[in-house]
Image (cartoon, rainbow, N blue to C red; front, side, top):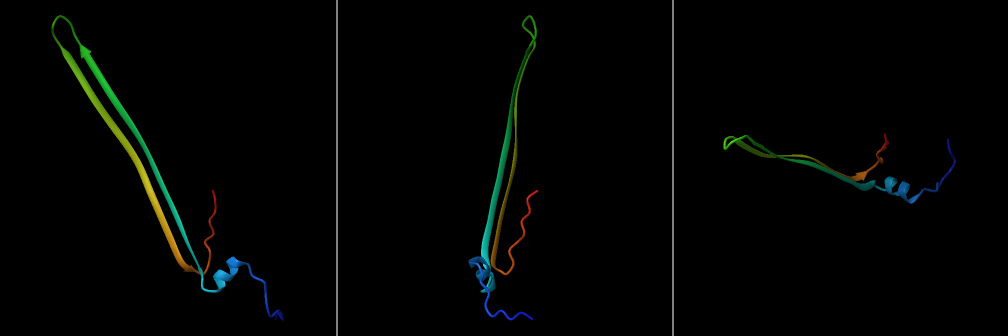
Length: 80
């Protein structure tokens, strides 16, 4: 049994003990790729012709919003 009556705590530790902490994490991501293609063909004496045009777009996007109010334990965020 400990006989210590008072213990020094950091401000962050006091916030957790006194009712939790509030925190928010936000992140977004956006990437786009665009392709444009043009083609043309011709033949000989006054016959045949062909033309083509085309385009494509690839879009990738994501978003994250995380809000914690009165959290009593801070999350353990590990980097990979």
